[in-house]
Length: 366
Image: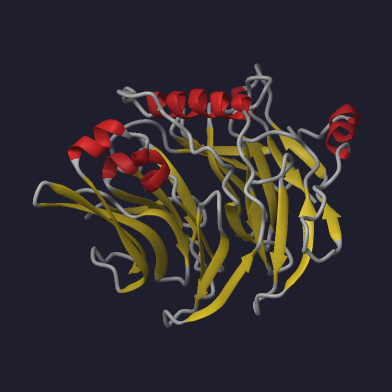
């Protein structure tokens, strides 16, 4: 059944104002995103309830896919929000999921689900039929992957070595060919070092410096965009299919400290997230003191790169063309630190990772 937003819900999303420009910023046109439709309810028909939305995307034919981490499945909806089917379930058998981390659609149509317990990808065709599994990383599978072509994708890859009792953590942005264990090209890399004592003193670095350190986006035509999450610097780099840098933009923004309430909420959310993955939380997570200046990247319906700021109280995007010129800005006038967006040339989806009313909806935006 189609789930349309009520007038009250639409009114809720119509309130609010975009952030004022910082000193030295040029004034650009600001568009406002609005809600067209929502899917999801607190209780009732299980086809339209979500355990925990991990990821979502719009297929080339307009169908919407929702990756549910709690129920370890993919739910399929038509372009009007009507439920169509569920794919996969929790388990370790062929095509089954246990800890789905993200998914993306290759330009040729295949949907690749990063399944952490299988150390690789579960692959479905564009009809969501299982085509196979890619599980040849014995540890540390490529994370946060984005499609580049029908046969290649870019990934954030972590590798760790022990050198003279110092842990060397290599962070790389690389390009893989589908089905190959070794990466073809290194686009960016650096290394962090820490002693076991350093990790005991600051175990939160596992999350802030490794698991949630970067933003990555691919346009499906060979280009990849990258930003390092930072409370002090705003910058995006882009590479073409040959690994050559063609895009480099920065903005001079003022750092924004997190409020005590935001830090407390983030502590609770991250702790629950780790626990829901099936593991304990052996330490108290300590968030970074400043809001990340860039929290997400996406190629929007206009074909331009959308950069989501983390410094505003409401979701806010800077939009850049392929030459790195900032052409406009886009606001979503709804407060909340946990808004997540799936942007593509086919449309925009949004959901709250930690909604105040306790259950998730998928919003289709215009």
